[in-house]
Length: 243
Image (tube, rainbow, N blue to C red; front, side, top):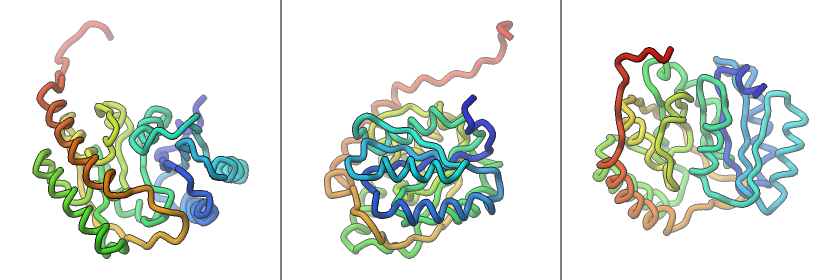
C-alpha cells in the first residue's frame, strides 16, 4: 500500500541540484512534522538532479520514516515534478514547497486553517528577499498573467501551497502549470484563498530561474492557457445507475 495514504497531508518538495541546501531542509522538515497541526509526511521528487541530491535524499529517507521520494530518469521541470507528486500522493491534502527554504515549512500552519473551505490555499510572499531585478520580473509576470486569466492571484510564484488532492489530480496539466494553479482551480469550479507568508534569502545553491523562464516562458504560457480555457470540457453528472 502507498504509505502516504496514512497521512492527511503530503508535502511535495521538487528537487533539482540542491545538494548544498538539503541538510538544512531535512532538519527543518524533520522538526516541523511532529508539530504540524495534521499528520504529515514529505515526498521529495528528484527531478533528474546531476549533483549529489539523489544520494542525500535517499539518506534522509532512511533516517526519517515520514520521508518518501520519487526519482526521475532525467530533468523534466517543476510542473512535471508537481504532477508526479499529485499523482502519487494518496493523502487528502497535498502541500508544495521549494527545496531552497526561501519559504518556511512552519508557515503551512497559516494555510491549513483555510483549506477546509477551499480547494487550494496559496501564500503571498511578504518582505521579499530577492534582488530588485527579480522582484520586478515577478511583478511584471504576475500582472501579465492576471490580465490574461482574471484569477485575482497576487503571487502565483509563491512556492507554498496546499491543495485538496482530489482537485490537484483534476487540474489540466501542461509545462508551466505551476504558475497557473489558481486559474486552473477556478477553471475546474473550485475556490482558493491567499495568505501572507514569510520570505527568506537563499542561503545555498543557485536559483533555477532566469529571464526566459520568468518572463518569456510565462508570456507564451498565457496564450496556451487562453486557448485551453476556450476548449475546456466541464460537466456535472446529475444522475446515474452505475453505482
